[in-house]
Image 1: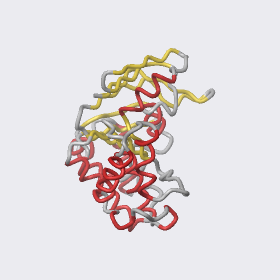
Image 2 (image 1 turned 60 degrees about the horizontal axis):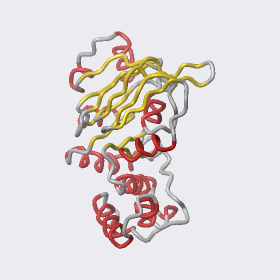
Image 3 (image 1 turned 120 degrees about the horizontal axis):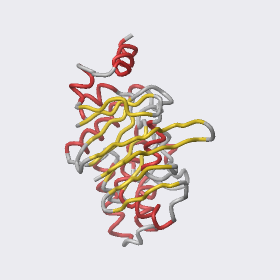
Image 4 (image 1 turned 45 degrees about the horizontal axis):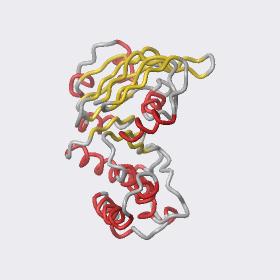
Length: 246
């Protein structure tokens, strides 16, 4: 489904990702954890080509891009992005559009789909994330948790093969975190392929099929959550989990 091979990414003199290789199977939930600055978000942004790696390759579905110091073409970018939907920390909803318009806009404008059909699907998606009664509100009328659930519905509207989540709960008040994680748990049960950068360790333990621990721009350890959290093999992983416990 997703194959990342030997990926390197730098910003100026600073190397942010070093020789990253990860695979994600269809229907799998992969959680990326690690300290701030470990490269998790940059890796996610490379997967959606919001950042361009200098080296390595990314395959999603049947499309592969090999990076050798040159920018991918617009066609390559759109082909890769067709497979994935991204949910950001900061929601990124359009303030001048209602919730349902936010969800429906991309399928209508980008995919050129039938407006009535898309609006019906948008209502179903908003029902799925518990926002049926908020369809005609504007983002400023919603709580942070509701805005993030609307953002998830918007990503789902494009029917992506894989959903990419960048710390989806980090901007939320603690009491709103649960409602967003509940939506994500339901998606996992339905078999939605997801790659999630998260600092919610209990969520990772419960939902992830595999957890990748990153530090200093490298993959340190990958394992099933029960093994990685209860019996980490690498000293750097042990140190990270010890620090979390204090």
